[in-house]
Length: 125
Length: 108
Image (cartoon, rainbow over all chains, first blue to last red; front, side, top):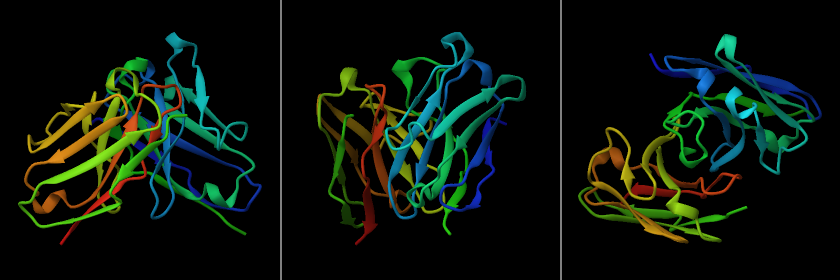
């Protein structure tokens, strides 16, 4: 079955760190860019960042709101992408989705046809 | 960063009616790299439209997309009960991907 499953969410204090995982199955993970998108409760979708495939040097990019605090990585041997979140703020509280574009790692096709169910991150003291 | 503004914020309609949702970009979206998603409560978004006007696999033909440049439209020709949801546009024409704020289509 083609799917993405996020894990690692939870409650963390402001200034703390958390690492999310996204386990992929049913498709060629190593050839796909992987993106993270978040959604605060009752709010809209916000793109967080992405990591490209090995063929594109695992290049990463981030939204301005998380740049310098969040890091995306991947382990192709485990078909898993990660989102390391440091210096967390209350405004980072959201459901975090990992998502995949339909045609691997081509910039022209960076819309998303496969989403995980999301994992909730709550930043609160 | 390209800012996407969706209007209206909420659309109150009855089943069988036509829904017209707007997505306006702060600058031109190259090559009509604009997608639309549907999201229901507690669920992940579902891809409806890509390339401004191409329907994703399995999407009914009552959903259609149009537009170019800075103005895009999602039309639902006749609303079915399962279409009441929130709809988002997303541009992928620049390296910083962005989403619109969403339009909620609610039952009148």
